[in-house]
Structures are given as C-alpha cells and as structure tokens.
Length: 396
Length: 181
Image (tube, chains in turn red, brown):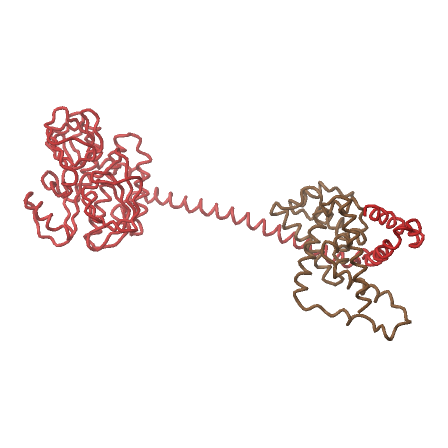
C-alpha cells in the first residue's frame, strides 16, 4: 500500500508540473489501474481551486475587520474607564462620609448615639464605636470601652423591647440558663430554633457567647446564631432583661430586692457596677477564668486573696462577688460565692440587690469598670464619660 | 510597504493595533478566503473568511490566541467555522443533486461545460467527510506540500498520504455516483 501512496505522490507532482496523465501512469504499469481513478479525482479536486479574492472583496472585509477592532478598542477603553470611575466614585463617597463625620463631628455622632438597631444612623453609631476602639491604644481603656459597648448593646435591647420593635441585634453575655430551647444570655431571654446556628463548640451554662438574632415583640430574641466566645472575651456588666414569661421569677427577685414590681412590659433591671473606689460593690456573673487568686468575672479581674470563699470554684460557675476597688484600681474581693451551675440564671437574682440601678447610668457605670482599673479619679462616672466623650471630641 | 514581521504583528495584535491587524489581514486573508471558498461554494464564504479574523481578535483579547503559527491558527479556525456552517446547513433538507444536473438523455453527445462539471465535482466533494474535505482543500485548494498539510492536520506524513488517497478515491466514487444519477 505504501508503494501505491508513494507512486501517487510522485504522479501528483509530475502532473502538477504539467506532465500528461497517461505518460505518468506508464511508469507504473502494475499500479496504473489503481492510480488512474485517483489521479482523475486529483485533477477534479485541483479544478475546484479558487483564485485569489477580488480586490473589492478584500477591501470590504478588511474594513469590516478593522472596524470590529476599533469597536473592541473603544469598549476596552470604556470598561477601563468604568473601572476607574467606579473606584474613583467609591473613594469620593468614602471621603465625603469621612469628611462629614469629621466636619459635622459631634452633631452626627451625637445624633447617632441614641439610635437603635434598624435606625438609619445606627451604622454610624457602630462605626464610630469601632473608630474609637481603633484609636484607643491603652489596653485597659480599650478593655473598658469594649465593655461599655457591650453594655450599650444591652441598653439598646431594653429600649427595643420597651418599644416592642423588631430589629436585628447582636450582643454578648454569659449563658445563665438553658431550659430547652429557651436560654438566658446576659439576662436576655433567647429562643433557640432549629435554624439557629450554634458555632465554635458546645455551649453550656456559664459559657460566654455572642448572640445574633431578631428581637421579638414578647421581649425575647430569636437567635439566628450563637457563637461561643473565648474565656477572656469582654462581656457586658450584668444587666437583666426579663420577658413576660419570666414574670414569676421576676416577681420573686423583686420581692427580695424590695424593688417595684408589677410592670407589665419586659422588666428591665440593672445591677451593680462599681462606680467609686473604696465603696463595697456586689457583682453577679460567671467566672470566665481563674489564675491562682485572681478570678475574672464578666471580664473584670478580681483579687480573691483576702476573700471569704463559698462553694466550689470553677470556670463557668455563676458567682456572687462582694468587694471594693482599692486605690490601685484593683477589685479586692471580700466575699465570693460560687453557685451551682444553671441555678443562677435567674438572674435575677441578685441583682437587684445592690448598688446602682438605673438604666441610663449603667452605661457610664460600665465605663467605670475600666476607669476603676486605670485611674484613681474619684469621679468614676466622669472617667467613663471621658472615654467615650473624648472620642466624640476627637471627631470635632 | 514594510516586510511582514509575524512576531511584531502578534505583539500589535495584543494591543488591537490597527496597523498590525491590517498587516495580518493582508498577509492571510487571501489564503483563508480561498480555503473557505474551496469548501463552500457560496457567497457566504466571504463572511466566514472575515469572521475568522474577527474570531482572532476576540481570541487574542481572551488570551486564547495563537502562540506561534498564525497561519495554522487561522486555517484551523476556518476549518471549524466551515464545519459549523455545514452542520447547520445540513440540518435543513438538502437540495436534490439531480435538480442542478444537466439532462443527460438530451445531451449524450454534447459536452458538459466547465461550469456543470465543476458543479458535479462540488456535489461529490460535499459528500466527503469533513476530514477528507479538509485534506483535499489543503493539498489541492491551497497547494500545500505534504509536510505543510501534515502540520495543519497535526498528523505524520504517512497518515496524510493515506488520508489523501482515501479522500481522492472517495471523491472519484462520488463523482461516479453523481454521474450515474
């Protein structure tokens, strides 16, 4: 077969050069019968060859191709301009927002400071909080500010519940009760549904968590996600929010504390927070860490070396702490009572007991925690305010 | 007129440079056109040939253009474009060959003119496989050597010889059948 292919190739070349078909075939008498039809076909195939295109065909199609190239160039420039313009516009908007923040300064921030989740200016409030944290380099002040912000989240929750508004919220706190799908976190009743995402490990009573969810009209938060926080996470100082369904428990607590009762809306009570040094303070919360004689409760380091200890110490255990801030801003525990896990939830507990109540002050009270640590200033409230207020002033 | 420099033309092509595109077009359009027209005897061949250059522009922008041989890329793309066109065309009913053929009974002694002969050959050629059409277009339409044809077909020379032989045999058989009809 190879001979046939070779012979065909030679014949094709000779015919192409002008040789006669019969002459060519005469050189391959054995293959002539096979080659003839093939060579006839090659003549036919060659007869189909097309001459070069006419000048107008070339010109017309050249114009078409070049026009297409021009359109592509144009759209390429436009798309790169679009990218530039989009980047420029983003930059301009950012600059305008930043300029607005710094020019309108306190007015805008002040206007935003009283907003609640779902309000138009609420993102400004949260952004401003982040900005403050960003520019707070002192670790203790920063820690105090974080606690203050966490308290603010609970304050917002109280206001949302009071107004019966549904809004997306997130807040941190200790799990003080887990009863089926009804938990209590930082005193806030939280509903766990099948859609709730429980993240980063098993969550038990005493766990520090961050809850993201939606406030409900019944004074609860329907959790969308509950995330376990590390032991050293900054948590709000205790605030209790009781929903209607917890009214009975509230009643009992109120009886103990002697506070008013009978409010039909979700009951909001605040407790503690040391706001002046030397005075006895009482805390309730859960232990997030124990290191020798230092115990961390609600993110506050406490010296228990001189404390009367009741119950079994343990991380995650709800505790009631009595003590005072010494002149160095260290909280000295005089009495610490470890409760059985899960029992305390209720928070309520204690709370009422002590010291400062008052919803508007707990904000500054939290700040005082920080102030207490790093300052000997007598005016705890002033110290805390200077934390946030100072930031606001910076905006001016 | 400056000599055509393929490397320079390819560089200019990346930037959609008109001069480079014009140079490439001038260099290869005739070749692409003749290939397409050989395979499709229709005015649409002109559009398909220029489409090949439009596809080249688009491929280069997507970084899928030719890396070395522009001619190889253009002929391969022309072949795909023709196959696509023929596939679409043959989905529709094919015209009966006999309609376009002369009445043999009345022209037994008359000579079939060149035009009719060409039509008959084309009808037979259209019956070949696309690979057979491709090899005949390269060898007898473009006048490529065996080596060049092997390069475009990405086959070795012996395989091209065999393919060419089968294609010619098939063409001759089809011509016989057309004649018989």
